[in-house]
Image 1: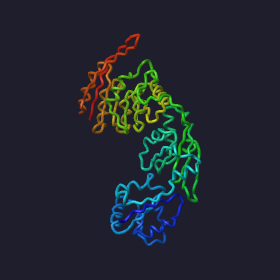
Image 2: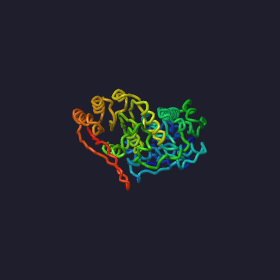
Image 3: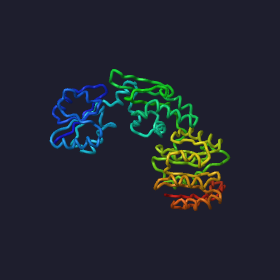
Amino acid sequence: MCKIFLIGIGPGEELDLQQREIINNCDCVVASSRHQPLLEGYEQEIIPIAPVAQTLAMVAERLVKKDVAVLASGDPLFFGIGRTLLERFGADKVVVLPALSSLQVACARFNVPWDDVFVLSLHGREAHGVAARVMAHDKVFCFTDRTNSPDMVAKAVLAACAGIGDEETAQGYTVWVGENLGTDDERITCGTLAEIADRRFADLNVMLLKRLVRKAVTDIAFGLGEEEIHHSRGLITKAEVRAASLHQLRLPESGVFWDVGAGSGSVGLEAARLCPELQVFAIERNPEELQNIRANCRKFAVYNLTVIDGEAPAPLVDLPVPDRVFVGGSGGNLAEIIQLAASRLPKGGRLVVNGVIEKTKNEAPPLLHGQGLNVTISEISVQRRTFPENSKKDMNSIAIMVGEK
């Protein structure tokens, strides 16, 4: 049975004797432009590694009669083409000869242990949300690209810190960048976020970000108490209502969530903590509440929540398309908010409105229905009691109105 020999090439490495013998016995060699100079003097046909679909089809044809060699960077099973080849041809057809990965080489140059790093590939990813993905972990190794370059990543993290006034975290990072590893042009840079943000780097690079580990404020994953969240004059979505509202939102693991009329930001805060890959936008017009939202983000180290200063619906126009929308306050603009939010919701999206006053309870259902949404209404009342004192505290009845597209 013919095989695919997947040969890893470490940074700056040449082909060794075993690899040369394998290539000599193959019909062709798949290689990127970066690795093709290693094949000078060989008679085998060289097939470009891209476009991948076309290359895989050619490999399948050649594999019928003879072995095929594929050159790849580092360890091909570590964010490399190994996964694609195994899925396409099966484990019995692929022989992997790994080399050192760029992560291993880079961390050796940085003199930083890598057994506790979180590995994040930003290669080919949308730039939006990069800071949140990086800041979800204390020690992150990043595979970059021309868009998500080290300077751009550093700028994104600095901007996220500035957005919530978190200067302590911004200054607590050490960043390493390894360029052109294993070549004569290799360069290692270490600096602060601000220093890295002010530099430009070669296209071929990797980076490591490490921040000072701060003691967690709480180990509670969900269920923050009102006394734990910064808010003003008791204006906060109560815990029982918050839990019910989040349940009705049916939050996705990733995507975009608008918290409109966020107040203290308690709903968006809990959503961001529950789903670190979710992009949360908290829209609020009150300066005091904006300060509360930022303080809560700092307190609970929430970096996937972006604070938007403005009165809805105007700021919503420029936000990414939402998968979920929560309306906690409307400032008298409920009809306009629902119309705009519903028009941008994708199929399967959800819009949840909390109604405390009768006006909102009466207006929201027909407004949601008028936008073609399927509407359900849950009305809850909460009574808190202490034991054994048996003191009671009644809260207003609140309607949770859900519109699903």
